[in-house]
Amino acid sequence: MNYIYSILSISGSIFSIVGCLMTAFNKDNKIKNIIMYAVIFLLSVLSGILFYQYRRDTNEQIMKENRRQAVRTEAQRLLQNTPHINYFDPGANEGVVYGVMAIIESNKDLILDDTYESYKKNVLQVIENCNENPDMQYRREQMEIAGNAALQFLQILAE
Image (cartoon, rainbow, N blue to C red):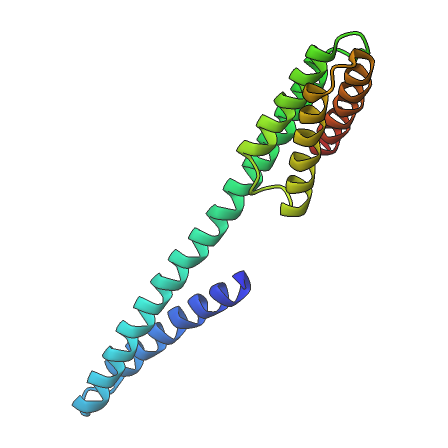
């Protein structure tokens, strides 16, 4: 689509120059001159509009790519600063899970909807099951699984 904007802008500029030259050499026909000036004006306006749309589209793409890079950087930083998942520390594992969820939540428009929804649903379900179950061994196992899944998801985001 970007090529179409560029081609139309360039051709509009060329036609404007040709039309201006044609009216300069043909001064005896006023109707033709008025039509040519109208064509020059319309092509100039069209060229400006197309350039504006092109800049808007490319700026949106650049901004989206910059956000993706920021998410990658944040995921890499979190991976470096996150302690290893520990069976004996379910609270830290839960913190890792919530940290990854916060990154995903704040950037859910960059992540596929199905991936985001399934991760969120699974993690919340694991945490809810852990909180309802009084067995500490079960809680530790489930939070270890959820923490490892969160780190795996972070590694995917960091790539």
